[in-house]
Length: 337
Image (cartoon, rainbow, N blue to C red; front, top):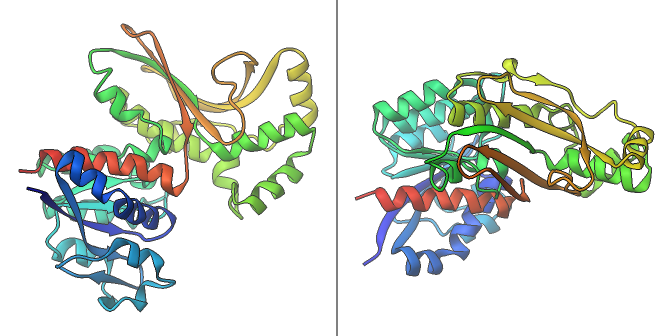
């Protein structure tokens, strides 16, 4: 007999739609392997929400140009209202990242905890601004709070540390955690092109945002380091505690000189136990595991027993991020009576 698990998706942009599509496409697989049936009962957006206690077809919602075309659309029904008012087990919070206040994701997560709903999120903002407060609220309400997708897209980092590596002391972490920066540096090096040219190309391809500041100035990588520092090293820090240098001043000439000497330049985020996290361009030997190209991300975890564990993969994208979100959903659903 299938276990029905009722879910809400809050934020229906690239990630929210990707999750809904993946839930639809993987339904039979999850039904058969885990005996779980995820039933989408609400989708919350800024202008209104879709609510249907009998279930919403996730693929049908994905196919709509605008959610207000759906027969169960409720104009003006805010996401926080459906979190508080709709009977559901898990809230998937997928609104855009805001590292200044964490809103609206912060309020959405707190409302979910207060109404005894588990939370799965890809949203770095609230975790960067108020991780300790969120963790405490979840614990006080005996609620699961999972955010694997917030750090490495499809790469299993947090769950690997909590699970497979749980007998290990984590001594340090370093990695390339932003695919946009890695793409730009790779193209500049291989083609000898200037930064502005490659950035424009990346924007045309959809690899870089129209405003690339968040990526190229190292902010995105720093936010991910904050999440790692707080959740793995119990540091209780915020973005302002990270030393951050981006890639905007790197030239193709510098990349060539480094390459001729046997190195590549990569934007590396690193954190050692009890030390201040830092993001900065590093010289990396060409044969080093961190010398990955293109949009790939990579993270290396140094441990006392297992040695160094390295994971590489796609750190962004709707489908890839959905992999981590679905993993967290299944973990929580398995513990729901």
